[in-house]
Image (cartoon, rainbow, N blue to C red; front, side):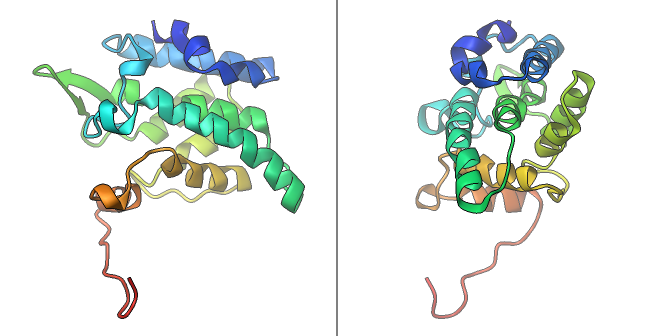
Length: 199
């Protein structure tokens, strides 16, 4: 089961001090793993079926990137701007924010596909509340992506985490469509040209 792989895949889980929050991480992954037992190796789940693991990494590397950067962001915001953020919340959110992709990504005719119209952010936030996460973490999860209906972050933590998500996906303009452009187009927003005279 995926839940049995968490400690090995995400060693920074040990840094979560609050037992209730750490337990909720395991409960969330247990839930999604039971919903779709097709996924049995956390290192073999892509960030998205259209992004091959060989080039873009996997969901686990996306999460590890977020936990690593969170450990720099949280103390930096405190030191530079006296903004108190909860590192437990950032680490937990990083580990579970995309957990509902386990439900979303299914095999059809031997190929992994994303279920059309599935809102993994909303579903993961709903699950988070049901397994005992604080509402702040559920809100961070719900607004973490621009995919699906636009949701506005209502807290500093949610806003910062929303910006953190695309940083940890190596999809860059030099390779074609960037992470930002892909998110905009997924919402049918148009991407306009650069202003005259600017690159």
